[in-house]
Every structure is written in structure tokens, then in C-alpha cells.
Amino acid sequence: MAKNNSWSIHITQHKWLLWVIAFVITILAAHYQRTTGPTYPVRGEVTIGGQTISFKLLRSETTDKEAPIEIVVPDTAITGYIKYRRYKSHDPWTVTPMRREGDRLVAALPKQPPAGKVMYYVYLKRDVQEVSLTGQEPVILRYKGSVPAAVLIPHIFFMFFAMFLSSRTALEALDAEGNAKRYMRWTIAFLFVGGFILGPLVQKYAFGALWTGIPFGWDLTDNKTLIAMVGWLYAWWRNRGEHVSRGSILFAAVLMFAVYLIPHSMFGSEIDYTKMGQ
Image 1 (cartoon, rainbow, N blue to C red):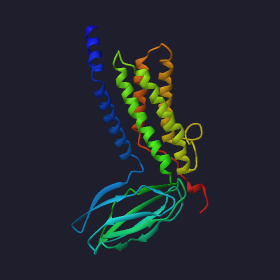
Image 2 (cartoon, rainbow, N blue to C red; image 1 turned 45 degrees about the horizontal axis):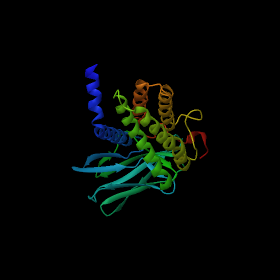
Image 3 (cartoon, rainbow, N blue to C red; image 1 turned 120 degrees about the horizontal axis):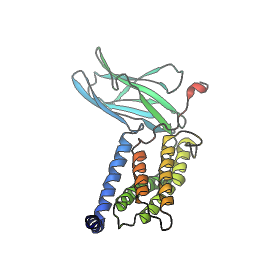
Image 4 (cartoon, rainbow, N blue to C red; image 1 turned 60 degrees about the horizontal axis):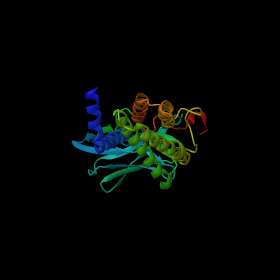
């Protein structure tokens, strides 16, 4: 028992370190979620004519403009073209040559409505050599409506701090003398504002619907927010009044961390053009 008390006092005297650890956990989780999502640009390199060409291809664009495709290719002997069609459609492939602007080859994909997707390839040619930047796999780009900064920035802020407070609450729950219930309430508050007030507003601006998760759909971003909230409400219920359940708090924090690691925009809103006219 003395050993446990010593461990608890040790944590209590270093609360600042718990905030640092929680912040690092949040930063790493946010970076992982962002860079593994289906809207993060595709990056890579190809070799053609003995030259290495680096590229970055978009996978997300707003509906008010065409999606630009730009590859830095100083060698003027290298030309390029794009091949594209709407995702989930019976469209034939459209082939468009890339034009040269200085040391770049450029082209653009046509505008689509919110949640519309386009799948495309980018090819480079030099003499008889031709290479696809992404091999046999096309790039899939999704269009979304423009979200006002006054809505998007607070949404990101509240969701980031919800994860930050969730991690901090879990660390507090590891301390037998800690007050994890206080941080738990703040976690729920930030998650509610970020995920259930600002989140639907972002969704409305981007894709025209306030909520596309259960029971109206299977949008993973909405559903994982719902799952995280259910976990924290369970922890709140187990810790209501004088009840103390550190295990339920740890469970809610681990659950939120797990759903937070799911790449952003996975199984998000999309148009099925096969069910629509040309």
C-alpha cells in the first residue's frame, strides 16, 4: 500500500509533466490522423529519362474551382497528360494533355458538386518512355463546399482540445489521488461543442447535410464522434455523484484515442453517379 501511495504522490507533484505528455499524445494522434486520411495529398517520386521527378497530387478541392494538377518538370523534352473520369460512374475516360508553363506541366480537373469525386492518372512521357505517377492505382479526389474560417477554425480548436483533455483526464485517472472527474466534464463539453455543434455546421457547408452518421448514414467521421461521446457519457454515468470509477474514465479515453486514430474523412460523403443521369 505504501508503494501505491508513493507512486500517487510522485504524480501529484509533477502535474505539469502530465500536461506535456497529454499534449504530445494529442499532437502525434492528430498528425497521424491527418496524414493517413483519404484527402491528404499523394506524394512520391518517379524516374524518367534518368531524372527523378517529385510530385504532389491533390485529393481534395472546393467546388468553386477546378482542381489544379502541377508537376515541376524542368526538362522540356518531357511532356504529360491526365486521364480521368467521375468516380462511381459509367463515364468513359477523358484524356487531356498537360501544358507547359515554365518548368511546370499543368492541367486541371473539372468542377464537381459537393461530395462528387473524380478518379485520375497523371502520365509523363519522354521519347518512347511513359510512366504513370501512381502506377496502376488512380488518385481519387473529392470536392467539398467552402467552409467559412469562422466555423472551421473553432471546430478544429474544440476537437483538438477535446482530445488533449481526454488524454489529460486518462493520465489523471492513473493517480489514485487525482481529480479526473473535473477534467472529464471539460472533455465532454469540448467534444460536444466541437463534434455536435460546430461539426455539423462544417458538414453542412462542405457537403450539404448537418449529420450523415447513425441513424441517417454511415459517415465514419460523424460516427466515430458519436462513439467517442457515448464512451464519455458512460464514464460520466459511472462517476455521477459520489461514485468513482477510474476504469470507466480510462476506457472512454482509450476509446476516444482509438477512434481519433481512424483517418479523417474515411467512408465520407460521396455521390454515386451510376444512380444519376449524365
